[in-house]
Structure formats: C-alpha cells, structure tokens
Length: 105
Image (cartoon, one colour):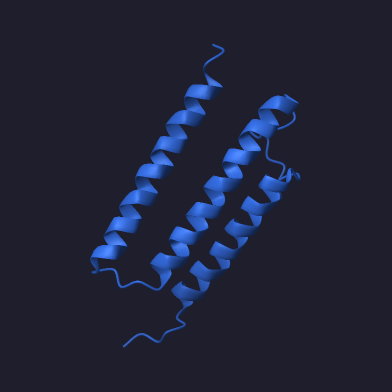
C-alpha cells in the first residue's frame, strides 16, 4: 500500500503551489519568473495586460484541478470528470491563444 505522502503526491503539491503562485503573479501584473525568448510580453502593453489576466486564471484553475486530482483515486468517476474538464479547458485555451496570435497575419 502506498503511503499518503508519496513522492508523486509531494511533487504534485509542489507543482500546484508554484502554478498557483504564478497565476496570482500574473493577475497582479508582475513579470514572469522566467524571461524566455518566446515570451512576447515585452511586445505590446495591451497584449501583455490581456494575456496576463487570462494566464492568471488559467494557471490558478489548473493548479486547483491538479490539487484535487492528487488526492482522488484514479479509478473514481470524479477523477475522470475533473481530468476531462481540465484537458478540454486547456485545449480550448490553447486554440484561443493561437488564434489570437495569428489573427494579425
């Protein structure tokens, strides 16, 4: 039997906290933790404000979903429902982000 605080559970908790803090930082309008080359926040202030709000909500909802999934048995129906909603939501977010990025093309 697996203990309650296994490595995977602790890893999920750490990632959930980091993701939640990252979402709060985005909602507050702060700079991201990592300044990556594909990050286009420096391109346009309107673009940055628009996507920071959406990224903040996205990160916070995903962190809550993964927190719930960390303590739910994989075989339960609620796990499959939450996991399905998280995957569909992430895909819709990705499609919206890509269509916004290429709308000026």
